Image 1 (spheres, rainbow, N blue to C red):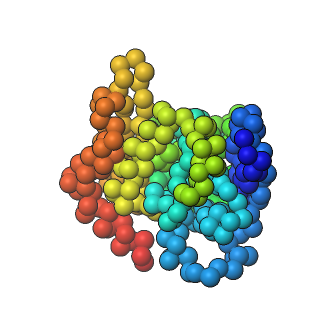
Image 2 (spheres, rainbow, N blue to C red; image 1 turned 45 degrees about the horizontal axis):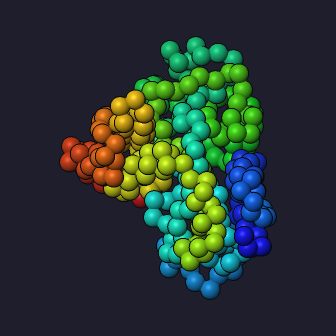
Length: 308
């Protein structure tokens, strides 16, 4: 084995560092040398080329994309749901780690009486907002941004009834309180609960090392979900949910997908069960069905609303 040290790029939030350390441990257990490098925000980095020329779109990922392209780090570790479906030129998906909890949860204060009356919920996600309004049209939804620690703190400081979080993020850093309920009716973000490791396409040593961490079941399910998202042209903006689940007993995949209007009043859903042999086009075919049944018109409406 070569003496090359694999430099692991990460943002410096508690959750991002937890994810980076998880990958570091798995690589070290395989005998690789590693180093974690917390990368500063993209505003601190001077580039020769504008970002759009590199095809970089992800608000949470572009800083690390740039660090890899500039040779500062060898890999980047991300929550997969934050990663755009089209990766920048020269960057590839090297591994998807075994998936954690896929659910969204409601962290609430005091009690849940407000669910039967009027209430105020916080989330920065259009997908969560639209699904919440679809189920609770009389509620107020307020914007909530920042890393999970910041969002939990804002929930404590404000008079909201609750806030929606991904269960996996809170569980990973032991921030999940006792006052929560699983939102099993809410369809998750594509690839929610999964971590992905990106590497440079021409770095065969690093790709060989990292590919040993790949979980094939998670890779297939997240591929289906992200293909659904990409075909609907959602990017990170439209209210789109997708969840694929593998059933070992009969070698099938269950897929649920949803596209909603921003106000949650319109909801287009798909629910399929197919043989595992059909996985490669499942996301694409499901999205096409939605587009043909009113989804294309709805996507145009969503894009126009977001431009305002």
